[in-house]
Image 1 (cartoon, one colour):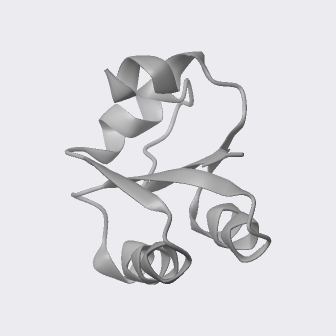
Image 2 (tube, one colour):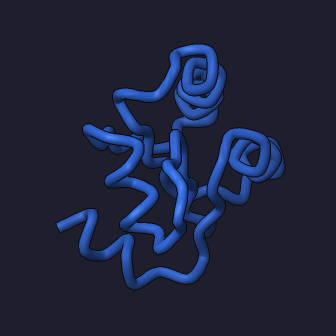
Length: 82
């Protein structure tokens, strides 16, 4: 259900740097995190989400998250903007 909805959204930000930037601007509604991503990439985003009380949805594979976002590369984190 969440993943199907994610495919139809156009207000997505992909990647750690962009996600962090928008979290710090309080512009993020929800964050999707790939469970197979390196922890050094995802830990900071997870901590920021917890601090800012942003919902986190975990996805099994980076490849799956990239495909859902219609990009040709794997994605560790994806943010849905408000």
